[in-house]
Image 1: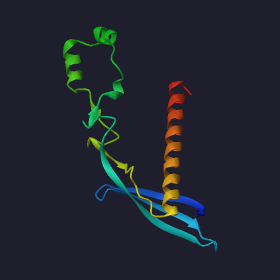
Image 2: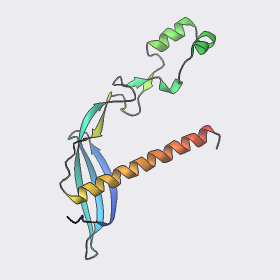
Image 3: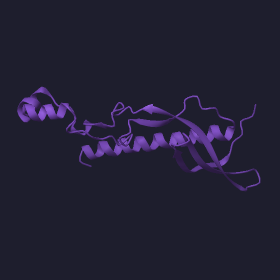
Image 4: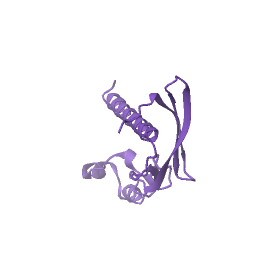
Length: 144
């Protein structure tokens, strides 16, 4: 079985339609005659409890871990009680305070080779962006 290769396949735009639980990708490629083809593809998504705030919608992760030494030296009992009850929490950026996030269905059924390649291209790009963000954050911590 020959796998069709789409010449110069690009993901031009993406959108998440939370109402319909669909990721919409607009892709372009060139056919065998050199004509540009633009298509919109739809991939199912599903709701999942936010892994950052564990469904709470807020967290105090920006403060970092509080050691017993920190607590003894820098926190009085009222401040620490306030911390434990969520007084220092901020809204979760990942779920925007909703407690749940839309994720791509792991059981996504690809109907065509184009969908397979576009989906893979989109996710490879997301992973590259995340890696770049991690490197930049490490460089900022080192004072670069």
